[in-house]
Length: 292
Image (tube, rainbow, N blue to C red; front, side, top):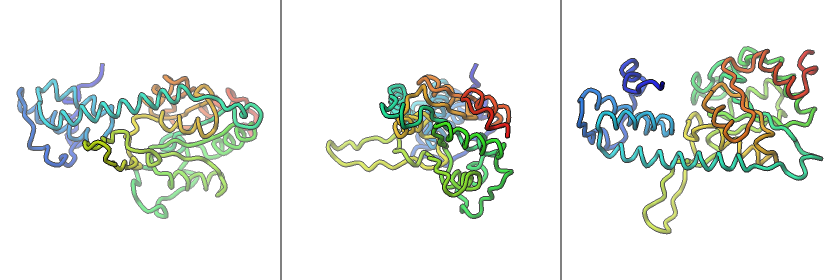
């Protein structure tokens, strides 16, 4: 059973203590218990700031239970609808991805996609360094869960004709710096972040025909909801189908959503450790290369 979001907020009130959405903090109109309604309102405003479908669903349940009726609730419901529509579209696009006719002869028949934070990297690099200058962010062998085996795996996969890529919610430059260290400056690793995609919650202007500029998602955000938008783009770039993709990610939600499209998605709560890499290497026929 999913945890009551109000109880979670009471246990850790700082978790959602974010600046109010402009003009909405004073519009809360609780009809039930005042304390619960206030906390539900705080949770709702925090979810709006996060712009993430999971957070919004949880906050809206709490708001409705508390009897809230305000502008923030209506805004959150509308935003959630747009985010869910975008996630459904990404899922459908990934499901419909097809292997390129030329791939059987010349292109990759497998695409291995790695998450970065807590999968390749031992720590959550975005959570640790956020927007710090790149040259102040250290990258060493200790950055990786298992640098030697990761390096061997990537090289073996490429020799076998597979494509490799990174889909992260963090920073492309940090992941790129890590790949420079692991594989060299010519690593050729495609790295996709939220910043490569338009805001899925964007609302068109009310004036018919009026141009409305869409901002891209910021790095470090979870606006995309899951990795399916990134996977669909990588599938198209590499000319592969969903069934040709292997995703390794420490976030179980991303894994479950990718599985819906037919991706071979694997949960890696301990990152790319020896056991995970060995199993993947055996499954993909490159086991010998990772034993050297």
